[in-house]
Length: 218
Image 1 (cartoon, helix red, strand yellow):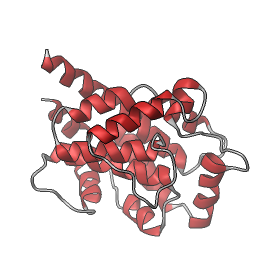
Image 2 (cartoon, one colour):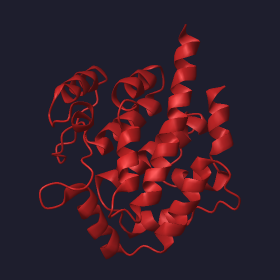
Image 3 (cartoon, one colour):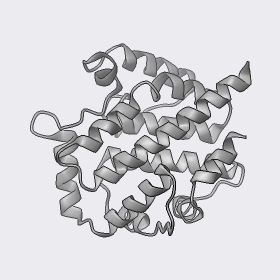
């Protein structure tokens, strides 16, 4: 089962930390882990972490990390313990905002076409309408910002069914790994270096699970 692969890579302590935000008894444990990992990444990519987020990450304690995913969690927890709020706020601004733009431009349209506000955004908006996912009124970023896309994916996992894998194949798999690779090589990345490593390892795992799921439909 795909969930068994998740369970093998997800450390129990990591799951407990993620689930501290609220456990859903009607969702399989491995899907809760996936859902909450997307939400954590969305939170970190939407804005610099506050102290409560850093404290949560510090609680991750992986004694013997073996996989790329567990190693990334381990490094992120250690880095969070050494990170100051002012430092990470400056880092986030340099990476994602900057004077004109940051070192990483976190939009699907930019990665898939080279320009902003292009067809990938239009296609995403169509699917979000179909899935009845609406942007919050307080959010002004285009829907193809990586944080918004990951948040939408977490909602689809929470709902269950095949839509999550269709959404992943259309709107996450084609570009998110490249974004995390750019983030990994960004000059300003310190706290966000292990975030990028976590993102890369997680998307690799999700890609494997997506292939398994799609093959099971045939």
